[in-house]
Every structure is written in C-alpha cells, then in structure tokens.
Length: 470
Ligand code: ADP
Image (spheres, protein in one colour):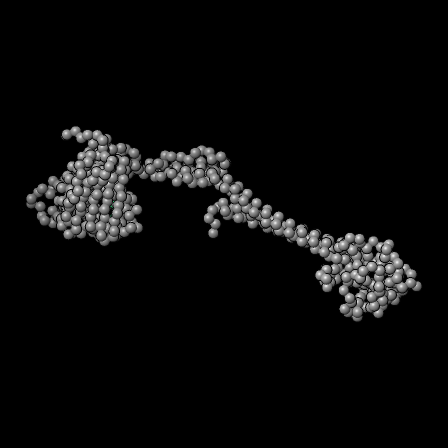
C-alpha cells in the first residue's frame, strides 16, 4: 500500500497528530461552548430573579409599572448583542408596554403552556429577523397568586460568534499543523532512514566474487552501524563457508583425477586385446566412455574451483585466434556426424591470454552447438575483427533456448528444461566459458529462439602484442 517506509511513517505521524489535534479541538470547543452557554443561562436566571423581586416589591403598583419605573436602574446592557430583552405579561397573557423599543422576543404562542410553568423554562428561539435568542420564561408569584409572567432573553450571537471563531481556528490550525507534521515527519523519516539506503546500496555491490568486501564500520547512527557490523560478521561466516566449499571441490577433484586417469589407461590397454569377447569389449567401452566423461567433469570442476580462488589469471601471451578456431573446427568435424560445421567468416585476429583456456571456450561452444543441433542442421563459426575487439560467433540452427532460460544458462550445473533426453552433460560447460572469457577481459552474449537455433558471441580484446613464430 505504501511505496516506502518513509511515506508510511510520515502518514502515520500525520494521522496521529491530526487525531490528537481533533480530540483536543473538539474537547476545547465543547468545553468553551458549554461554559459560555452556562454563563449566559446563569445571567438570565439572575436577571429573572431580580425582575421578579422588583415586580413583587409593592403589590399596589402594577408589576409592569414597577419594572418600567426601575428599568433605568437595571443594568440591562448597553451594547448591541450584550443587551437583555424583557417582556412582561399580565396574568391573562397580555403583554405590558415597557419603555423603549419593542423587544425582539416573539409573541406568546401557547398561553396555556405558559400558565402551566412550574419552574423557569429556558429555550433557544429564532426570531423573525433572524436573531437566535436564549429566552427564559417564568411565572411571577406573590402570596400564592400569579401576578404576571416574565420573559428575559439574550442574543446568542456573541456565543455563536466566539464558538465559530474557535471552530475555524481549530480546523485551519489543525489542517496547518497536520500538513506541517506530514512534511516534518517525512523529512525526519528520510533523514533517519538515509543510512539504511546506504547500507542497501553498499550490500548490493557485494557479489559472490567479492565476498571479501565489507561494509563501512560506521554509518553515523548506532543501530545502523550495529546492523552493518552484524552484516559484516555474516559475510565473514559466508566467506569462510565458501572458501571451505571451494577448497573441498578443488581437493576432491584433484584427488579423483589420478585414480581416474589410471582406470582410463588400464581400460584402454584392455581394449587393445583383439581376443576380447564382444560383450566384454562393449562393457569396457562403456567404462571408458563414462570415465572420460567423469574425467571431463572433474577437469571442469577443478577449473572453476581455481577460477573462484582467483588462481586462474590467464597467461599473457599473444594467441592467434584464427588458427585456434581453425584447429578446433577441424577437430570437431570428427564428432559432427550429419551436422555441417563450417567456418563462414575468418578475419585474422590476435588476442592476449591462455591458448589452452581459449581453446576450451571454442570447444565447449562447438560441442554444445553439435549436441543440440539435430542431424541435417548446421553450425557456422565466424571470427571478426571489430575495432579493438575480436568477435567469435558460433551460430547453430538447433533446438534453441527458451527466453526465460537465457539468463540462467551460464549458471553452474544449470541445464535447460528442454534438454533433449539422452543428451548427457554436466551443466558446467557454459559457466567455464563465461569464467574464461571474463578472466580474459571479454564478455559473452547469447541470442536464441526456441526451435530455430542459437548464436553465442564471444568478445575478446584484441592484442597489441605481435605474434612470434613458434
Ligand atoms: P551441458 O553440459 O548440459 O551442455 P552447458 O553449461 O554447456 O552444460 O549448457 C547448459 C545448457 O544450455 C544445456 O543443458 C543446454 O540446455 C543449453 N545449451 C547450451 N548450448 C546450447 C545450444 N547451442 N543450443 C541449445 N541449447 C544449448
């Protein structure tokens, strides 16, 4: 859902800040509003009590007159919005005239209900001219008799104004604080996670071939530095395990080679006997072929183990690539059967390196091309000089390689799924090819279409040394 930890952290912080601001804001809003309303109601109560006392102070004078007489002395508010409005009614509900302008309190709708009032009643009403009033209504009783009714009102506009001001301040302030929290938390998260990005970058650079490399000891942040240290100690263990495994492969291959050579030698001697029974000859030929295969496998393993240990730095001798290819093509014709092997383009080109290893490269590519090309097909070999590069192309119209496998074909022990049954191989040939080519400063590329064939292209830097005749 989130593209990065940074955005997740920034989003979470912002959400938390917004939540806190909302809860605080709503609480402040509710508290202030209820406090203001409560104060206003208390003021109305006090006014009403004061007026009721005035109305009943001298029962000989009409209550309305009493109020009118003393209204000037009452602090009923001077400023608009702060004013207290009063209405007096006779016991039968007729409004008594009071000095000054007519108060905006709406006329009584339900006299009966007014008469039933037992205790003061507080209501919020809308007037025709759009005012919102808080109105207290009560009966005025003297000696058990209702002497009139009284309404005291105040405009709620100041309360509404203050609360809406507060609400706006909270909404805009909250939004601003939320946006600020988002930006700040993103920057903080970015800053805090930066060392992790460096660690990711640094670890990405460490491949199987450079397990000796280590991450810097300090990334400026304690946790990240500790992570780097534990990663380094993991690399230590990994490197040890790899070294052990390589040494084992190298030692085992080395140890197996001698007895195998002697088995092959002895079998070949036995095969020289012309009196061998056909079944025995066939069995011995089988042993010879299998031990030859095993011997190739062991040679390959040893070669790779040495390359891994960095011992395969090629000799720096000029090699006539054209002559080497010619010789290898000639040799492979003997095993080509019904597949045509032809050198279709031949530039004279010299490279630098180890001619045995380079011959192995050409041999492995030709072997594969012949192995995976059915009878009647062709294998075309070309050598070009392309600027400062020598380009060797082995092109066959064999079974081809699926696109999904092209990347993995050079991995050790990898054999494509579609390898035809009956075709034996170890899956080491191409990894040796790549290893040799790379130690010679070159590269290998592959273009292949399933069912149509493959083109393996080896690029090697052209030598600037001159060939000395052998
Ligand atoms: P193998 O000993 O199996 O031939 P390689 O490393 O030489 O091992 O080749 C790996 C795999 O690549 C083979 O198993 C085969 O599936 C595929 N491959 C190699 N060369 C060709 C080719 N010229 N045409 C089709 N498939 C090939």
